[in-house]
Length: 86
Ligand SMILES: [Zn+2]
Image (cartoon, rainbow, N blue to C red; front, side, top):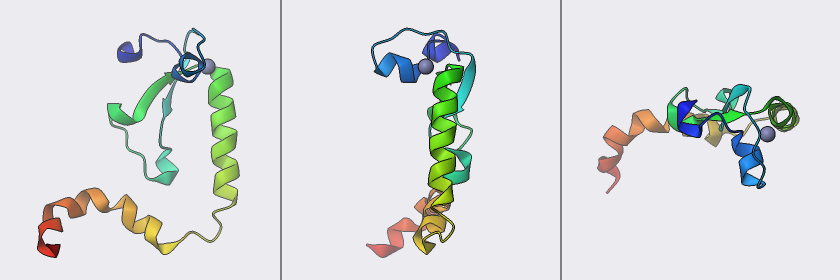
């Protein structure tokens, strides 16, 4: 990711400069994230592993997802018609 200068953004947030090996979805696709650049960041493998494990752990707690979450994933499509509520 040229935008991130191939520096791991998770390490950067912790004040470290680590070359990124991979591209990560900031919001996982399983949680409604998109492939847009806004949702992608450069990340190094160790950070990606940690993040992926955390996402899996979160997913394990989602065996009974709340109904609202599915609506949130579709929220982008609803913005056009959102004015009718006002
Ligand atoms: Zn990192």
